[in-house]
Length: 452
Ligand SMILES: Nc1nc2c(ncn2[C@@H]2O[C@H](COP(=O)(O)OP(=O)(O)O)[C@@H](O)[C@H]2O)c(=O)[nH]1
Ligand SMILES: [Mg+2]
View 1 (cartoon, rainbow, N blue to C red):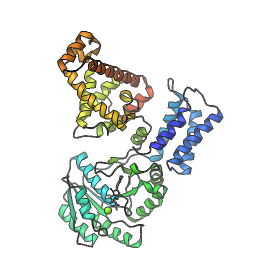
View 2 (view 1 turned 180 degrees about the vertical axis):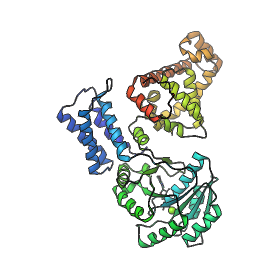
View 3 (view 1 turned 30 degrees about the horizontal axis):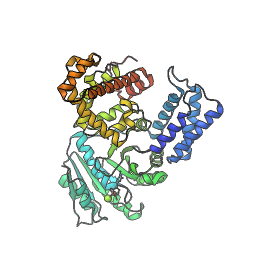
View 4 (view 1 turned 45 degrees about the vertical axis):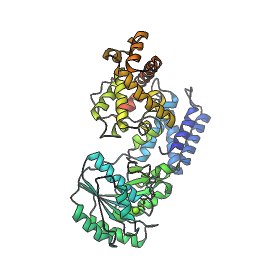
């Protein structure tokens, strides 16, 4: 995920609070300094970094940690809320009846993001989406967009021979404008010069877009601020998409600079593939960055493949503290439906499932192999055994092993894994802060069985 360096820096700074109940003045200054250094290294601007650490110092003194909450966690919570506040509240995007104008400088990722956004929309809302290629500067733009969407039912409109962008947009809207969402890709230049301004103004008039999204490469860092301001003056930017966050450790620059302009960040791009686009929500983004996990993000990943209700039910059960082998089984089923656990691990709390979030690729592959074997083993168990795995003693373990064609050792491994997961769930239940966070993330689950 993006901003690994910032995560490491913050963790490093906070690790020095371990076991402490209070900080003296010198220790507080030291903490503040190292957090500030981590922010600056991720390219957050100097003023914002100072503000955040000043607030941290203030709040560490003013706010008592709740009973049972360590000083380390307390500090983490403060940093979390300050970063979320800095990046601002999420923007709601209407799912239907939209014409989106994509603007930005040359090479920032407009065309790629146009394809990503079209696919995101189609999948997320199951609606008809069309794109119009109105970049008349780059000769291959239409072919590029077509290729990006080759495996997608999204309709791609373009006129590679025509050099009049405005006309292409007009024709395109007449042809594919009946789609629920139409996305218009435009040309970019090295800078926002007169020619580009004039062309965008004309396209803007014809398109009469409901949203104007600016695409900015995270590499530009702090310069994202002035760029956003310039485009805003021209077409009234309604949202910013920060692309290529995967390619820089200094993504804090673009994110924070955009935040200062008041334009909401609406999506982030984290790769070259069409699926590498994520709706930006600062609380989710920061909680993932700080390893607090994100249950809702997990549920959102594969709306098609995943039974949402089932996922919600499972989460409720996990939080209620009951965790049977059946629950673990369902969890695995869900994971295997998603296909790869690679994508979901970054959405889980760091401590989830025995530290799944910190596994390397080899370990992940191993885990995937385990999942399959576990499933076979559990198919040889009775319902009672799955509900109360404690009753599985030597003779039953032998029977299950024989029934599923594995070694007894494998059955014991499964039980050990369940035991670890169960303890983890208990840990979550006993951790008030984490529960509160989870409840916050699952805000709309009012009827959740979770006495607070
Ligand atoms: N790593 C990475 N590369 C990206 C991302 N978005 C776009 N790119 C690449 O950036 C380059 C320029 O993208 P393009 O969409 O053609 O930019 P445009 O000139 O603004 O239309 C291409 O090589 C893309 O594959 C991203 O989120 N991550
Ligand atoms: Mg382009």
